[in-house]
Image 1 (cartoon, rainbow, N blue to C red):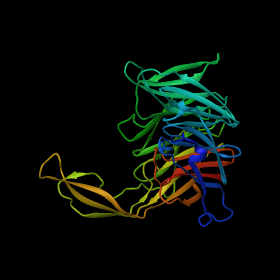
Image 2 (cartoon, one colour):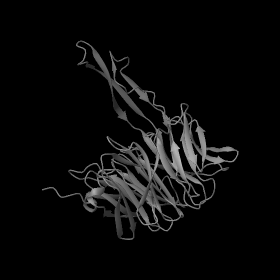
Image 3 (cartoon, rainbow, N blue to C red):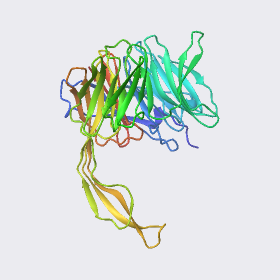
Image 4 (tube, rainbow, N blue to C red):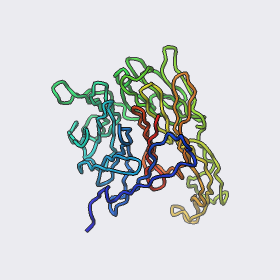
Length: 410
């Protein structure tokens, strides 16, 4: 008989040595890798993960097919708390309020759930019961009033197709607001003023992120690859929101301004453009191999959050590729006598670096940490997370077989 998943038994913690790349005085307080293995539930982290900069520990929250848990991570210890079984098998969202309450949300088991974790006490409730629709969390934030806001995507036969905003009513239940029927590319959050924000990366023909806030629509041009809202904290400095965009040149931080937009580029963030074609093709292979020595930041290689002073913190992975792609031919089963050309990775000595950068309106970006991490191997999208709270930055990044968790002192 196989034991049920237990992160206390299935997961191991390794303290990483960063002394060569971060000499004293080094701002890194915690740097550990957490590896989890179970004979049945081997997909821990595959559905995503979250990190949080709590007062006295760094939080790591994740799920597998049969488990969900939140762990307190310190310099040399890992203390997980398992969540009820119905939280398993779906992505888990986590937000820390300014007083330190941990809020969790998930569209698991066909229902949308919310939980609060204060100390060792966990309170869980169903926000939206299970029905015929498929649900997902399109946004999750907690305002300065301590009220959780959930934005829920819904799709399915005989069900509402679009987005709902769920907020706590004065009577203690939940109120729902219909936000429209466009299901694609939207995420939601709160501004520093508590007003809701809609981020739409698929609303225009030209490469644009469209932001709606306080009755104003702002188009941020050039975000042709990816974008990431930097979650605003209640009461932090203006502007009310920030967006990190990636185009075919670099990453840029963008804020709204009465005169238009404030834009600050991030250093060493050129777009990663691999030269070798990995797509299968019909016919003989034109070459036998291809060397990839490209460098840069790829799509979904970054995450962002806001500090109480209004600055944005960005964690990104810079890749230095060094690999050989080998091409080989196979008979095409759909066309007798024809061939297909396929690609596979041969030698791979690629090395990746984690960069943690601070950027604020009117200020050049400053780099706090540059850390070799071996190879970044995202098993979820994104495979990198960041949370800023108080005087600490929490970062999580997926490597070859682990989640590496860092805590950086501001």
